[in-house]
Length: 322
Image 1 (cartoon, rainbow, N blue to C red):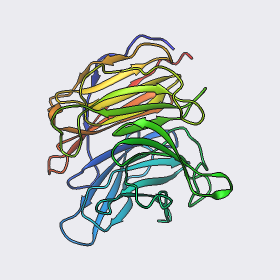
Image 2 (image 1 turned 90 degrees about the vertical axis):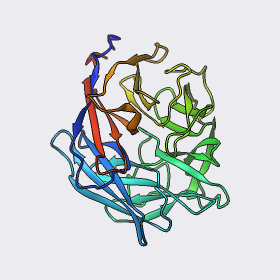
Image 3 (image 1 turned 45 degrees about the vertical axis):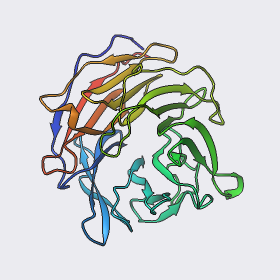
């Protein structure tokens, strides 16, 4: 792949669907096209719920409400989404007071599947589907539903949950010390993007941290030296996706939206310039990134949970050469 970096990424507003007080974003690919998902949590009085809305960014895909996540407590749930063909599945953090559990929700049928019942006294947070893991790694509510899930246990250690043989309880593969993690499947093995806690003030519920990237073996053990795409810069929220043989990582910081691109394994990360389009990066949250057909889409939420909440989006094409 050509290592010439893209020009400055210019963020521009994307009209959110009718989702008041948006609090989180995710990007998914449906039929090869990027779709932005936004959630809003209704927590003023029971019954509490989180609604998820869809906005197709390339003119293809669902629009409007795609899921409703019921909840017992008014806490904002952390969630992730993945697509299998034209269907969506969600993995959701279920607040239980001192202990949080994880469930998977099939967006089409509403079937809920517990992912953490085998560890009832552990608290799981920050769930994400392992990108590119394929189907069937965990017991699925429907054939082909996305499989392996990463999360953080007891706010300290990242794990990947995979099903045991013969349909037994999931197995927790430890990744190491993390307070947020994104795991990407690939060859010769997975890659883990980990945020470790660092000194400083939090932004909302997000603690400051630094980002490391490490290659993993088939059992998710360390398989090489770590890399630091943003050096020792403090960040709050992260996301990542594979870009051909490379990697794109996005993160919010105190005054910037950070985007790092590594064109190939072993190459150096480059932090790309981002034009915020007049928005204040100090209000940014919920960064997300998606690679489809060698095009990168980056999105971030500005002024979450206010009437002025809006999504900002940037795209750039990757070099088509392998």
